[in-house]
Image 1: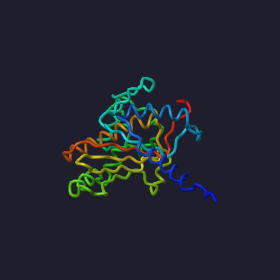
Image 2 (image 1 turned 90 degrees about the vertical axis):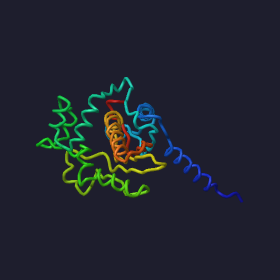
Image 3 (image 1 turned 90 degrees about the horizontal axis):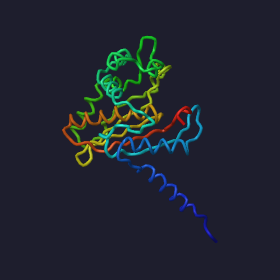
Image 4 (image 1 turned 45 degrees about the vertical axis):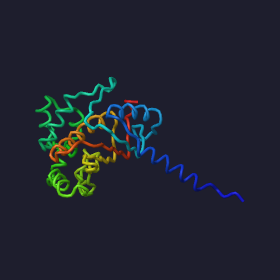
Length: 233
């Protein structure tokens, strides 16, 4: 009697999962180009987007954080202004306007009546001195699993009526005396969100590595929902 090949199917599924988890790119632009094509071809209709689910990949060189794809026309000047805004810890979009010279429409839509947003990640990671906490943990115990920054918090859902942070958390690990970082996101728009977010996160990784006086390692990026809005497909 021939037994069903359940074990074979299970192992095949595991191999596919492991392959996906280990997908690596040299830099952010290489990852962006790959997933732009992947979403357009294999994304599923989900609301007003095409999306891929449970996407994880590694950027081997986080310092290479420029998006050079000509179609995207990514602006370093804006990314730098957003980083400066994040460093200020001020969650009001008026601060971004002073730095950049204008307030992008997307931030205007997300702000409350007084101009405050929840998605200024610099404000988020400075709440409760989270950066200092992470640095202290990594200095005191190199193999700590506690060096994590929390951003999205469903317990604050009453304040998320217009602006819900897309990032769950960021975690740092020292491995082979290099600082690795993992970013975990509930939702990530590839066109707007990923291009600017990865720049901010990689700058954070660089800043913390400098405070620890160690080299940069890899940047792992996970998004439960990685998508393109229909007008970008």
